[in-house]
Amino acid sequence: MAGFFVSFEGGEGCGKSTQISLLMAHWQAAGRRVRQVREPGGTAIGEVIRHLLKYHPENGAMTREAELLLFAASRAQLVREKIAPFLAGGGIVVADRFLDSTTVYQGSGRELPADQVAAINDFAAGTCRPDVTFLLDLDAVTGLARARARHASRHDRMEQAEEAFYHTVRQAYLDLAAREPQRFCVLDAAQPPETLHSRILETLNSRGYGLCS
Ligand SMILES: Nc1ncnc2c1ncn2[C@@H]1O[C@H](COP(=O)(O)OP(=O)(O)OP(=O)(O)O)[C@@H](O)[C@H]1O
Ligand SMILES: [Mg+2]
Image (cartoon, rainbow, N blue to C red; front, side):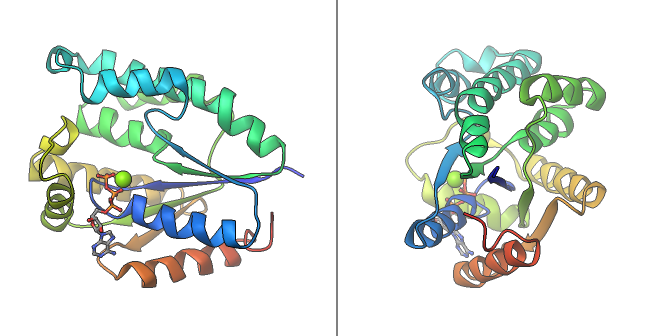
């Protein structure tokens, strides 16, 4: 039996990593076969691309088109090397960002044409799509404050985003979720972590993913 694929999306500092840790611990304690992946990265090739995108000294000169293609290249590798085989073997995959991040950040955020971004997403991911996507929705001030507090000593390009950019991203995510309500679950990320974790488990149960392994 094929497994299932859960992704977490939302702006910087919304609590994706926190919720993924709780979910991974929950499933590991239950003895489930579960694999966590992150974007960009998650494979040897993808981690090199991640470094290029986030920390390379020359990345300030990177065009938005090159940025889009690098994210897509990292994802193409991740899907075929890690995600698809694990799902085919009946495992659960949990992704810290997936193709919705590209739709939102490179499409709406960097103002690239939505149809071209969608075509590149389709090429990179093939038929691989999350079964459930949790959007952790948070206002810009709270999200940026959380992200900055966490990375007080290190600012990468994404975290230097202004509040206006964060707001654009937030709205783009909400629009995307409204277009695919059967896949997305939007949660108010201002709630305490344990409350959010409970909501996430409830949602997975109600959508039929509670008892799978
Ligand atoms: N529900 C919450 N309420 C209050 N603080 C939270 C909550 N969830 C996470 N935090 C705190 O906010 C900060 C950012 O959380 P986390 O790293 O999980 O977010 P993230 O979405 O993974 O961020 P990034 O996009 O930078 O990877 C951390 O210091 C974390 O402890
Ligand atoms: Mg994180």
